[in-house]
Length: 231
Image 1 (cartoon, rainbow, N blue to C red):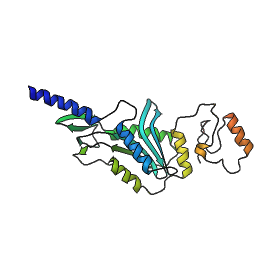
Image 2 (tube, one colour):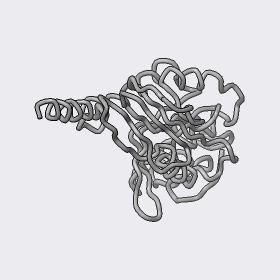
Image 3 (cartoon, one colour):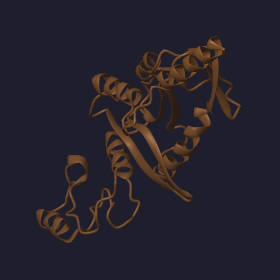
Image 4 (spheres, one colour):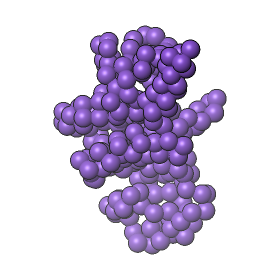
C-alpha cells in the first residue's frame, strides 16, 4: 500500500513540475522564448509581439508570440514540459510520460492552427507561405517519436530562424504588419506615422498636421478608417 501511495505522490509531483506552468500570463517557457529572440533577433529586421489576443468569428484566441520579420511571420506556441513526449502530427492529443505516469495534452500543432488562421485574417495582404507555424519546447522534454515538422527545441528554433535568409517582406510591410497585429488605437487617438516611418514623399506639413488633429489615416497605413491600402 505504501508503494502505491508513493507512486501516486510521485506522479502528482511529476505532473506539477513537468508542466512547470506559472499562474502568471508569462510562463517560464514563454519568458525563455521571448528573451532568446530579443537577444539575437532585433529591429529593424525583426519585431516580436508577446501575448497577442486576436479576434476570430467565434471569439478570441491568445497567441504566445508573433515574430514579424523580413524573412517571414512566425506564429509561436510555447510548451515548457519535461519527461518523454510521444507525438504524432495527425493525432488530436500527444502524450507526456513522467515518473511512469502518462498525461495527455492537446496536439500543439492543431492548437497553433487556430492562431495561424487569426493572423492570416489580419495579414490577408501577405503572399501564401509567408506566415509559418512554430511549436517550441523549452523544457527538458525528450521526444521518443520522430519530431514533427514545425516543432523545435528552443535552440533548434534559434537555428531555424538564422537559416531564414530569403527576404519575403519589405521593411515597410514589416512595419505595416506589426501595426495590424498590435491593439487598435481608439477612434480619436491622434494619428502617428506607423512606427516612426517618415510621411510619404510629397506629403505637405499642413496635411500631416491636419491628419494628426483630425485622426484621419495617412495614405500609407489607413489604419484608423479601416481601409486596407498597403505600403
